[in-house]
Amino acid sequence: MTPRPPLKPTTTLHANTTTAAPGFLTSLLDRIPLPRWAIYAIFAAILLLILICMICCCVKCCCKGKKKRKKKLEQKISMKGISGSTTAALVQLETEDVEYGFDEQRGKLQYSLEFNASISELTVGIKEAADLKAMDLGGTSDPYVKIYILPNKSKTFETKVFRKTLNPVFNENFKYQIPQKELIESILVMQVYDFNKFSKHDIIGEIRLNLSTVDWNHVIEEWRDLSKASKHEQEHLGEICFSLRYVPTSSKLTVIILEAKNLKKMDQGGSSDPYVKVQLVLDKKKWKKRKTSVKKRTLNPYFNESFTFEVSFEQIQKVQLVISVWDHDKMSRNDAIGKIYLGCDATGNQLRHWADMLSNPRKPVAQWHTLLSAEQVDTTLALKHTLKIPFTNKNF
Ligand SMILES: [Ca+2]
Ligand SMILES: [Ca+2]
Image (cartoon, rainbow, N blue to C red; front, side):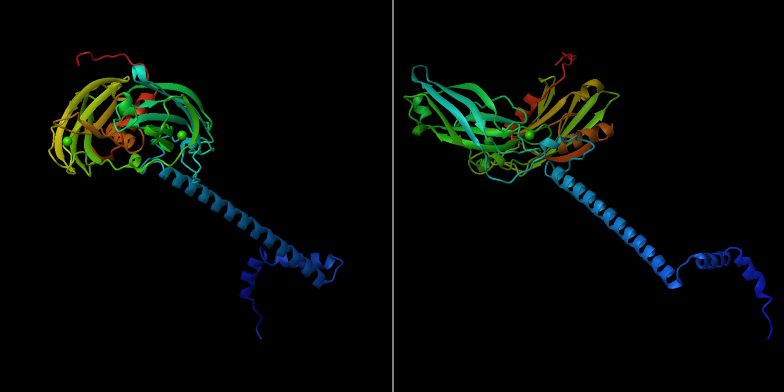
């Protein structure tokens, strides 16, 4: 039998690294005053302990990851609730303005009514509200009250907005000039809204008061529970598509009103005669205004009309572009079907369109927009804090 000299070099080579350890280990084990089985048992127990520790760490890490993902998902969902295509980068959402809450308790409102027949004057007092429904994250709302009289909705009043409270004390009076005969055929509507800086204002609830049932010989002051707002507040007004183009070098803003669809029926006979007003507002002042032609009897008008305004680069960052769709009426006042506004202080889809225009100079950017109620947009515009900008262009 031949020994295995050829193997030697390799084994010894490895021995330097691998067999030295077993040799050392055996001598070490020999030195421990314990039987071998006991040493192996202790060794196995230590290994088991390490393994259990590692498993625990892994489980903990996984749970944390899941929680984070869940949190992110929740944030995504709540942001979606505000406006379909709002991007966090474009719109800084105030977390307290994110909608939540499902319970139907809307709260109550205290109001007063007084009619002075000799001068045909109705005074509506909005006193206070209590236990209002929380519409924002953080369990609060930013309430204000809107007041109008039906069927002749000529004048809409609004109280101040109270930030972060469910028990606002308004104490404001509003006066209507209305003959008694008309008064007793009217309905007084008082709606409590939640103001949101970056999204649509939510209606908390309303009171519809049939004025024929009121005893006008006394001053009325009472509390009443708010009920769910009637549907027409959330009615569909239609969509509009237009393109925006800004050329900074020549200070030209071009708005092309392309088309509208599914417009609200405003006339008897189930149609409308739509036209579009394009308005620029600077420093809360109506600055420049143009309008399209009237399209007769259609709810899906095609315009393709272009308007160019001179707007400097400084002004484009402060201007508000207000687009409103109107129904033309031969016999009576034209009615606003819907409205939206764009600008650096706009929100959601509108801000996105404006930002797209600014980041793509010289390129026309077209987009569809859902129309909002004219009152809502006017309220938002009026409530906006605008910077005092010198009125530079006096040629218009
Ligand atoms: Ca709010
Ligand atoms: Ca009409």
